[in-house]
Length: 409
Image (cartoon, rainbow, N blue to C red):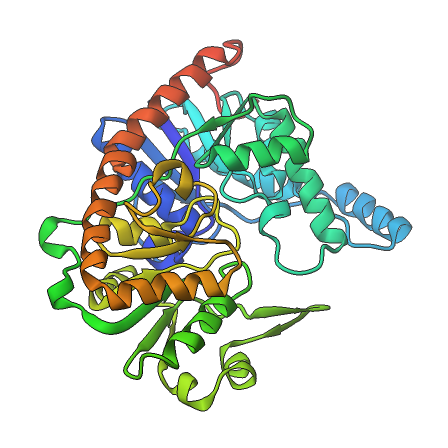
């Protein structure tokens, strides 16, 4: 089988993006199983001469299309949402990548509804993979352009012949929001790289006074929840410290204003608490794993996740994890056995769970061992690749055979 994946950036090690991580692990697992995979990306961050990676070419738009867009903007008084030129560039890149042989299937994220127009241009089935629809993950006020994107994603999802998602719960929310028939879509988890035993977390080798938060500094990832919980913990544990890694997007304050880490910490934390926080910003995947092994706990505080790599990567290392009971995770992992779940958007719940493991570190060791086994059993690349291939085969079998063989129609 020849499969094309669209990734927002490449390579995954530089992209620091969950979709890129998914594509990286999936393509390696599928190739290992004997299949050919190609990655299409708009953002090539490293000049590697890989024959299976293609950068999307420049976006071209006919003069008449530009004129029509300008007229619509003048009439509506708002920016016009138009993804057709970019989708044409994707299709042209896929056509170039198919010169050595046609694709059997193409997988693309749901963002901006690109899959709707892409399927119209291709003679092969397009899978819409939901990683986080905009109506669920948008931070802040919904503006006109957000509404256009949400509507475009709904059109694409509704028209898709094949939709997959790592969470059945998210599929159900999408079906409800867009008034789709149930059952809808296929739930397949995101795979996670399983660390070798020698590289796993150990209680006797970690710093029991160190907590690690992994996630963007923003509202969706719950950075403010983490800081509120740590402020309470710091008052009771004099030597406790917090390391935070992730991009500083800023906490949404409404009306287009955000508050970045330094300003947020000054406004909301005592000086003593702030001095015990090491905000590192984005770090490499290798460095993140080093910090996971060093800390007593790996923590997520997200208000929403479709499927959290911050959590599953820690589990695969055998780390003890505290995380909100968000979509995806609760469908594959057992509460109080594989990790400790907290209530979503609840700093007091987070503080209590962390405190439990600080006071009972042997419990952290038990969680780490069980969580790693759950990752191996439920989320290994080999297992997820086999589930995905079975899904692809059904999609291909259901796709009209007329015209199949070329990429562009």
